[in-house]
Amino acid sequence: MTKKSCCFFGKTKLGYQKRDKAFELLYRQIEALIKDGYTEFILSGHGDFDSTARIAVISLRMRFPNIKTIYYHACKYEDNQALLQTIYPPIEDISQHQAIVYRNYAMIDSSDYCIFYVVRNKSGAVNKAIKYAIKNNKPYINLADILSE
Image 1 (cartoon, one colour):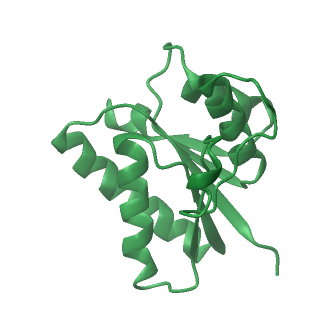
Image 2 (image 1 turned 120 degrees about the vertical axis):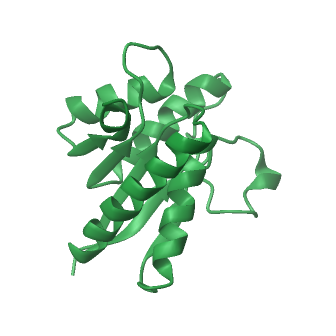
């Protein structure tokens, strides 16, 4: 059986009400993906949205113990590798921002589906990630579009 994976992106700060609504949407979306055979959930661990996604995945693990969380970090410091499964671009002499961009691309390349919280028309690594997902025909949902309605 092929493993199916989903990644999450969104560095936007969320207020309490949006975070609660994002959690509810994430929980339902992740539950549907699990029922569709998704077992791996890839997170970066940055910002309110990523924390909300992590909590939703961990909450669902209580009901679905076969699911797995994988953490990708754009960290180039070797001492942090022991903490989590750390993945960073094997490229020396790049900025931290560029390392984050490459990390995001690696997460998308490793995923079958992407869940974003991206306020469009802003610059930054997360907006580059959604453009990369679109360019590479990755199915995705942008919860920021839903929560802004």
